Every structure is written in structure tokens, then in C-alpha cells.
Image (cartoon, rainbow, N blue to C red):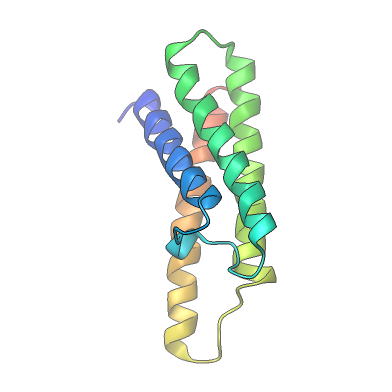
Length: 126
């Protein structure tokens, strides 16, 4: 898989996640930050929309590598913030083994997304 393909997939993911984040009647499922903090959810939805749009647009419009690197790094930082809020601030698991395993599974999926964005950023670093 090429870096451009990964960039397109990650860009589409963030666009979809951003749309779902700003629509109040749609549940984000495992990627929800918190059901009790709608303002934070909306803010991250808007940021995800912008990040996804820039990642997709940079495939079709001329952007300097440094700009794509900075945008990818910004996406990475916001995604890490989303993980911190959704998994450690408002989403610590219950004491049951099933709850902890589910929490770890979702955390690993979010870590894969973070790793993909980090790979994109490091590709455009030079």
C-alpha cells in the first residue's frame, strides 16, 4: 500500500468521523469521546472534519511537504487528545474483565489510527 492510499483512507476516516461527531443524532460508537459532553464532541467533530478535508485535498491540490507534515502532526496531536479524553478522563473501564478487555480493544484500534497518522507525518517530514 502506498502512502497516498493510506492518506486517502485516513482522510476519509476523519471526514466520516467528523460528520458523525457534529451530527447530534448519530452515535459515534467506539470513537465517541463522551455522551455527556456534547460541546467537546462537537469541537472534536469539527476538527476531525477539517483534518480529513486537508488530508484529502492535499492529494489533489499542490501542498508543500512541510504543510502536509504540519497538518498530519496536528491531526496526530488531536487524535492523542481524543484518546486521552475518551479512554482516560471520561472512559475508564469498570472492574469486570469483559469491560477491561473491551476498553483495551478499543484503545488498540485508536492506537492503530494514531500510528497511521504518525506514519503519514513522518513520511512528509523531510
